[in-house]
Amino acid sequence: MSDSVLEAPARPAFANYVGGNWQPANSGRTYDKHNPARPSELVGEFPASGEDDVNAAVEAAAAAFPGWSRLPAAARGAVLARAADAVETRVEEIASDMTREMGKPLREARLEAGRVAAIFRFFASEAWRPKGEQYEQLATGSSLYTLRRPLGVVGLITPWNFPAAIPAWKSAPALIYGNTVVLKLAQEAPLTGLHLAACLDEAGIPAGVLNVVIGRGAEVGTPLVRHPKVVAISFTGSVAVGRQVREEATERGKRVQLELGGHNPLIVMADADMTRAVEAAYAGAFWSAGQKCTATRRIYVQAPVYDQFRERLLDRIGHGKVGDPADPETEVGPIVNETQLNAILDAIEKGKHEGGKLLSGGARLDDDGYLVAPTLFENVADDAMLSCEEVFGPVTSLYRFETIDEAIERANAVQFGLSASIFTTSLEPTDRFVNEMEAGLLHVNSQTAGADVHVPFGGIKGSGYGPHEQGRAALEFYTEVVTVYQDV
Ligand code: UN1
Image (cartoon, rainbow, N blue to C red; front, side):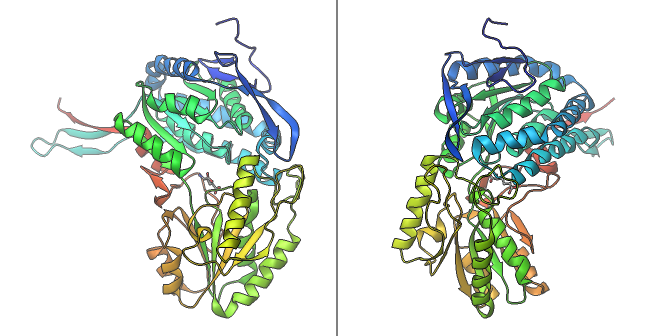
């Protein structure tokens, strides 16, 4: 232990977690994290880590790998189960820190913090499930089986918009299957992930099995992707960075999994339950201020109910609570930072310039906090920027359609394929939708966002690359298959 090692905290230290120690960046550099709802309020000073810190974390993870991977899976699962208990005792604390550091409304932050415990429990229970398949050798009938083995040190690069769920759903499967981890937390939301590390530390995770490094993509992410001892990279974030990660990783022969953007459509058929469809459109487009890759970006409404739907959605927007994310009634909180805020406001201007008609919102709401009013467009051309490119904020557009063929064709006409919803009470359009919609996550009569822990999560087309996350699908990415011919 070096002089700079801090005491193990009851609350997480604002520090990296490397080799079981809470420590500052090797350079001593820090950066200030402010509250997006009140930018003058400092959340804390966090380490501005660099390559040295990544190297130390990877070495710690490599040293811990033999011991951790040889433990019975049930022993690894017991650590996750104890960590789930720890998370549950501090859901409120995790949620309020999440709200403070990245602006997610408290009501959603609470759900996300609770979701972490479910994720840890689900992956703890993977200890009970098969790790391979048993066959017979053709010539002799002797044993022939597949065995899934851990990969080694894996690098996990996580975004700020789900600062609890995504670090949990990457690290829990990595750990249960016997890998050791270097987790990069997002610069915009480090504190939430540190809570998770503190819970795993309290649960007795051996030193070096999980390492957490905070900092910028270029200073932490890049050296992590390039490190020769890191054998696999799981990344969630933007398309541009994801492409770079994939190139760097595959060039070096590494496994890579990407979860990228979305441009998720919601189709409302004339026979839909209008109340539920409007509610799903509002929640999908505007909760978390639209800062979800699963948010609803396009709403296709069948012609006979278009005017009625528009009116009801505008009414719902009028009643939605926008403002302080720490107020448990708030549905739409701030944008994470000023850069993102300006990008959203620029996109709204461009949307208007390209002929979109603004029905609601379209402007900043507060001189201080980074609030954007829920923004609804119509008359947006199918090839306009708002119809094709992901604007990571509370911005969505209405489109009128006549037939299910037309709706599916237009809904599919984007590079992304993450999530899609249909609202209908008929089987025929449902059947068409589930068979023809180009998206990895399909919702019939529910909103485009959301992810259950025990089933695969991930996109197709430009929304993802590599095996899906969560559920048993995670086994695919975090293990390698060997085939064993075993004669006695
Ligand atoms: C959800 O919709 O609850 O970054 C999860 C994202 C996605 C996760 C969405 N990877 O928005």
